[in-house]
Length: 232
Image (cartoon, rainbow, N blue to C red; front, side):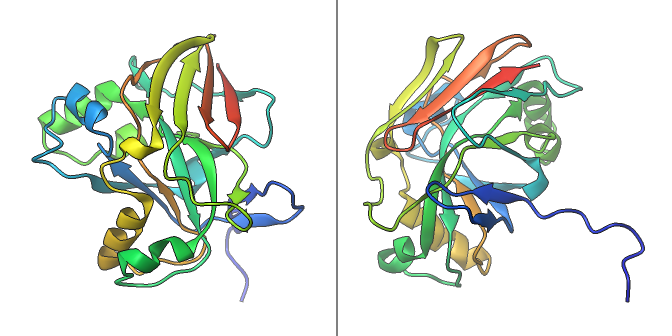
């Protein structure tokens, strides 16, 4: 049988040191996983542990190298926020994965951004509605090339930063995560059967804020390089 419409392309990410690509299945995101960020959002990290939401895979915007790419400012917002995040890409799946085994499922890591219509999110929170319109805009998940785990250690610490027009805006350390990457994988696998190709955006440090058209964002994580985006 033939498709009645053209098959949409599957998002695939470039891999550092390889001509191969990593096909993406699902994109999971963890919320309020750094205590300082939880506090700046008016929450108590001691009482409210991190939680998960999702973005569509076609919301990924691939930033293949060090050169800046244009990032579209989405419609229906006047308060568009940046959130720099470490992204874990799974090469193995499973369900009810023990925390002790969880990192064995990670194929690679990358620098990513969880871009958010903050005004839309605030309205959704006020009305107790889902966050989809706030979190799932086109190109709302910029991501750099994948750095395979093979031959390197899993990142337990390291600077994670974001600047706007070369002015520092976010600065934290991966060691400040409330739930580690292994914790996140183990917990997610109790809700879903995870599969190769799944991505996990692992949370953002404090300092999130708005960006405007004409500004340049640079997101960087120690050991994984940087990505640059021109907001247009």
